[in-house]
Every structure is written in C-alpha cells, then in structure tokens.
Amino acid sequence: MSLYERVDRELSSRPGETSEYRLLFTVCFALLLISAALRRLGPWIIGGRTEGPRSILREARANAANCAAASFMGM
Image (cartoon, rainbow, N blue to C red; front, top):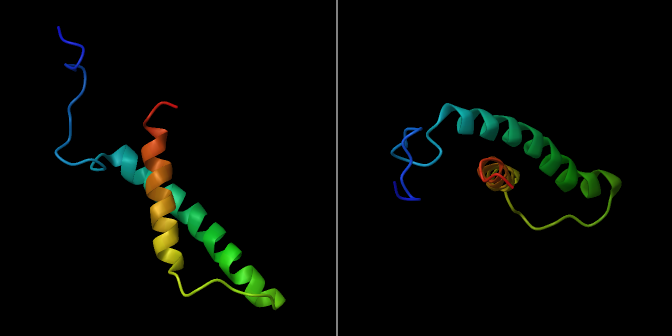
C-alpha cells in the first residue's frame, strides 16, 4: 500500500464540504466577527483614529476560514 493511499475515510468533492468544517467555520466566524467589530469600533467610540473602509465581515470570514482549515492540519 502506498503512503498516499487512504482507505479509512471518504474524500469529499470539494474542500470545506464536510459538516465538521462548516460547524467549526460557523463557530469561528461568530467569535471572530465579535472580535473584529470590537477592534474596529473601539477607536471610533473612544475618539481615536480608525482604519480605512475595510469590511468587518470580510475580515471575519477570512480569519474564520484560516482557523477552521488550521484545525484540521494537526498542528
């Protein structure tokens, strides 16, 4: 048997199609959305300088995808 053959699990047609990945992405997204919103709105509330007009949702989505993917890498 080759090192690259795996017979103990089924491979999905697309990465991120498993229910475990979707569940973990959802949890990470919810937590990181709160984090991104607080980080972005904190200086605005206090009266300091704010960052440019980047999307909070886009930032949270990218960080959640990294978090969910890294959790399956076995680091």
